[in-house]
Image (cartoon, rainbow over all chains, first blue to last red; front, side):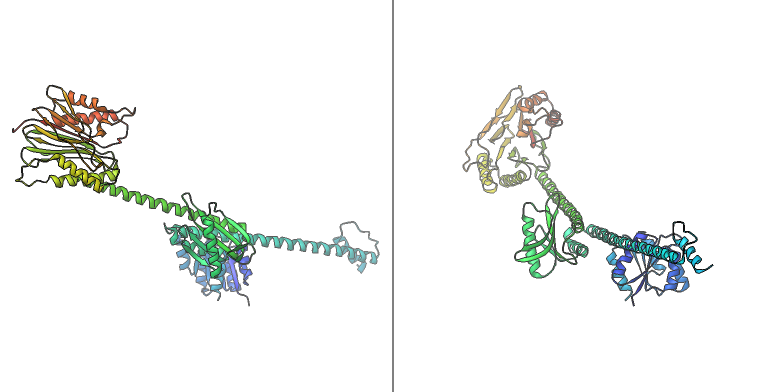
Length: 120
Length: 468
């Protein structure tokens, strides 16, 4: 059965690019446009991997991570994909449970590589 | 409501035109059938349009994804290139990153010294390609090449992409890719990406070359500065104090090291030996010869305390002539005046190709003692006679190098002998160090704004007759 990857990002374009590249190699891709929707999909769909943006309306990525920690849902690997370049942001994300932080612009090939690595 | 009326109601919803209420059931059914077919046809058409749009969108996304990948590659490569001032230290990593985006099965980087980096592909392909890249690089016009079906030394490459690394100072190397995976051609996008990276690398190479050159220049300047310090240390720390001679000197090199030199020694009581010389040429070579000559003179004139013999000046000049012929390049020579002043006022000197020695007598008359022999270091045989004169108390002896009289101003006029004599004459009643100071100031005022093109040395002696 194909592994499920959830992409949480308010940018249509970036979600499209990620979907295009991940589906090409056989992943099932789910999308959420903000943190609130993303949190709901994590709880309901239990994806194998989540790519999570930080700067989003309604609920940002840090809040999603914090809520997941509070709910005890820490077994789903989360890779933060962010435009924020500060080292503090990366540290913060890792402290809140993110497995990895990558910055935009990211390499689509790298995304595919990480998806394979974290869903093995 | 019977079936006919129900169907008529549905037909009215679907249809656009007014329908008559008294239509027969068969008419309503036929109408509905036609209408349904139209709707199905429209749906089918929309479906086809949507499919086409979806395909178009897919291809846009694919293109966008590629562009995103290229952007990410350029960012990464820029970051790698910034890590080191020496591009050759990061070429392998850069080529690896670049080929990750280009996806060629054969890839190679050759720098201008023929060193190979990142060799990827089967050996025979790489070797053939390396020969081709080297020829391309050595060709007068080495420019980007994108081509298909290229045969190189018997090996056929289905596609090639070659980009030279052209900097502002040199062509630093060339990158070559061949046999692109998953595509029969290298695209314009591939070319743009590789050219962007090539420009970045060229910049790095240019910067490194500039820095290396600056370091070399700084080192050379430092060595010249040290040479200048050593040379200065070879000059007399001070003019020896002698009862019968009041002496002073003005010495200024045109560059950090110079070719003029002078020396004044008091080998024993009642005698002063002097030499003033000018080595042909300037800067380091002249300075080296000056140092050698100085050393030779000092060695030759070292006198044991109990020896009281006179220096044989012609022998000394002859010795120096041979020394220079043996130890310096063929185009170097030295003009010099060397002499000996005795306590009783007697002066013996040999002027070898140098400017005349001026003597200002106390009655205000000038005497000139020109060269009696050729400069040293020109011919094997040195033939000369000593010049002898006798000084009276108050007489001034003026020795100088041609840098003094050939000092130019902004109008390219020369300082000249007459001006030199005039200044000395006008100040003849002052102390020697005051006259030297006046001359120094006059030369500076005369040349104000113009570069000093030759070393300047002025040695002045006034015979006081003291202790005689």
